[in-house]
Amino acid sequence: MVSCSSCGKELNTVSSFCPWCGSPLIQTPSATPIPSSQPQASPPKPWTDPFYTSPYRPHSHRGYHMAIGILSISLIVLSVITVPLAFQRSLSSFLPLNTSPVKERRISQYWSGYTTEYSRGSVVDVRASWVIPVLNCAGTSDELRATTLLSIGRSAENSSPQPSVGVDYVCHSNTPEYIVTYGWNFAIRYSVLDVQAKPGDTVSAEIRWEQGKFIDTIEDSAQGWLVEKENSTFQSTPLRATAEWLVTSVEIGSEPAPLANFGSVRFSNCYATISGITGPVGSFSLVQYTMISASGVATAGPQVLPSRDGSNFSIQWLA
Image 1 (cartoon, rainbow, N blue to C red):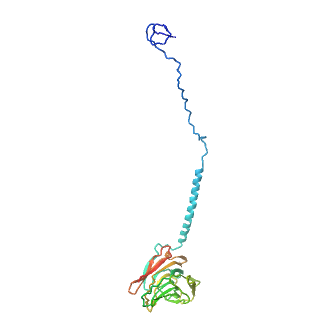
Image 2: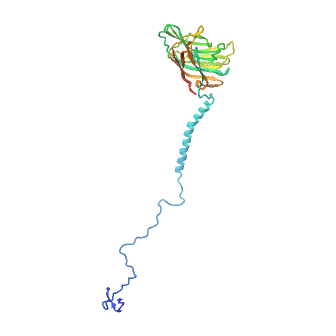
């Protein structure tokens, strides 16, 4: 029951003014909270990681194992590549270090090509192959000659035994002729009459020093023949100081014969054994020769320089 604070009368109704004295009534708020019509939200629960089970969960090593596997495969592939290269470098280390094989250039009326010059008794083997060229003998009245050959010795000393083997090219009355030759002195060679050589044939030749004797070998597989000659009788001790891959002229009287037009001769598989080391022509120090006429005109010369590890070069007819 509510009473007026001014007159003390009890009031049975809730009103803003007392009906007895007219004084304003002061309403005291109820201590009991009025229930809300909307439901109260429950406090949020703390978030938990559904994948988290323990701070000591074991770590997966799958990525680590994959990295180790990739690294192992890379090392194996690298070793497969580098080991042969290292082996090749170790072999090449036995060859003379020679960044520029041609150490000197000379001229001669008698030969063109490449020679080595080493100490006496150094050279024990020289070999090469070449394709027999087609001679151009058209319009020639004089006898023209050229020779492709290998030799061991020293070109400047004809008195020393100097074996050679090769093919002579002769233009006589506009007719080409190809003659296989060998011999034991650079200026004197003997024709091998029982074999034939034809333009386009690949000829392989070798001269080697073995047990106190020279052995000349020449082969034409297209014609099906191989000739081998030996010589162990010498008037003087062989010098064996040079290995030579040449195109030469032939001396008639005291003058070189006019050079036959052989076009170009390409030497391949040119190797030598010098001072116990076997290597391609480009691995040795070389003297390059250009052939000239009596009037000083260049008539033949090397056109392709052998590289550090190269075994091929060519000699071109010039005039």
